[in-house]
Every structure is written in C-alpha cells, then in structure tokens.
Length: 46
Image (tube, rainbow, N blue to C red):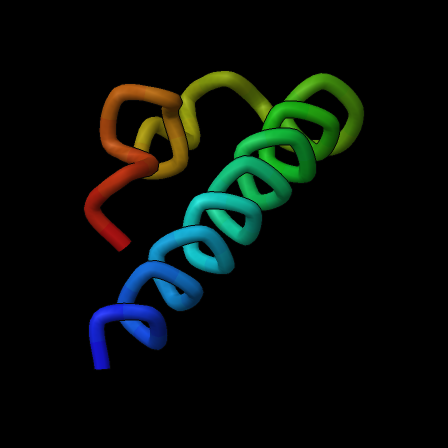
C-alpha cells in the first residue's frame, strides 16, 4: 500500500507540473491575463 501511495504521489506531481507548463503556455498565447482562475497561485487547488 505504501508503495502505491508513493507512486501515486509521484504521478500526481508530474501531472501537476505538466498542467502548470501547459497553463503558462496557454496564458501567454491565447488567454487574456484577466482569466484569474488559472493563475499559478490558485493552480494547486484543482
């Protein structure tokens, strides 16, 4: 069980990092900065 939890934590960290990168790229290209819900500060909530 503990190993599974560690694996899941590592996977989640990778997914979160990828989402941050994708979100930053989208923000720089398409979206106006007024879309505050996906700011880096609130990105960890989802």
